[in-house]
Length: 329
Image (cartoon, rainbow, N blue to C red; front, side, top):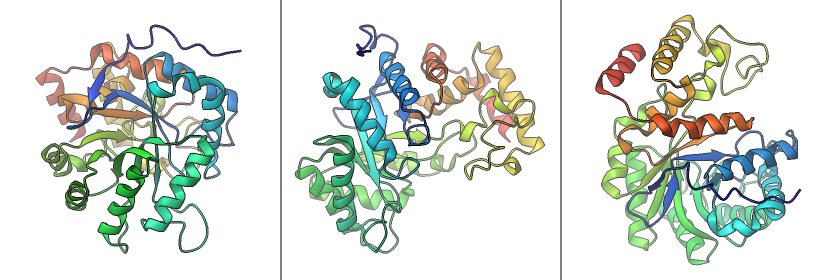
C-alpha cells in the first residue's frame, strides 16, 4: 500500500531551534537504536516510521552500528526510505554516527579520519542517500588527536556528505575543546547528544552550561532510563520486559525496591498531572528549554502516540518540580 503522509502532520508537533543555528528539530525525535535491525519485522519498523512522521516527527536518528547486526538498521531504514519516504526527503532530518566498533582491524573504530570518512561512506550506501543532515562522532577517542577527529568532521561537511556536525557522549571540557576547534575550522558544532533522564543527570553539572555558552543544541538519549521511567515496572519485573531479558542496558539489579518506590511515587504525580509516567519523564527532560529534543525508542506505535501526546502538558509548577526532586533524593 502506497504511503501518503498525513496532511495534518505538522499540527501536533513543537519545533525548537537547535542552538544558534537555522535548524529546528521536533521536540520528540525517533531513534532507531532498537527495533529496526534484522531481528525485527520490517513491516513493524515501517509502521513505526510512518506513524512518527504522521505526527510531525521529522528527525530519525541512526548510527553505523545500530541493528543488530551492526549496519542493519541503516539498511532497513534505507529500504523503507526508498519505498515510503523519498517524496518527503527534504522534510526529514536524518542523522548517523560513527565512533564504536564497526569492522575488524585498526580502522573500524574510534575517531581517526580514516575511520570516520570510510564509515560515513558506508552509511550513505546502506541508506541510499547522497548526504545525511547530521553526522556525529559517537564517543571521544582517548588516543586520536582531537584536531584530527574534528578535521574529519569538517571535511565531511565540505565534501557535501553531511550538512551539520554533532558530538555524542563528550564530557563538558572535551566538548568545549571540540567546539573551539570546529569554530576555527569554520564548521560549528550543531548539536550534542548526551544520556539524560531523571536517573542520569550528570550533564546538569557543566555540560548544559557549556552548550549554552557555545550556542550548541542538545538531544537527550535514554530519557526514560531504559524503560525505568514508565509504568512497566510499577508492580515488579514482568517476564517479558527488557529487565528480564538479559539486556545489558537494564538488569534486575538496577530495579531495587527503593527505585521501584520512587517510580511508583513519580507515577502517582504523573497521574495527578493527567499523564502517563513516560510522558512526565519526557516533559521533565525538556523543562526549561535547555534540551532541544528528546530521543525516544519505540516498539509499538502507541508509544509514539504517548510521546507526542506529552506536548499537551509539558510545563511544571514549581511545586511539582520540588516534589520530583524530593522523590529522587
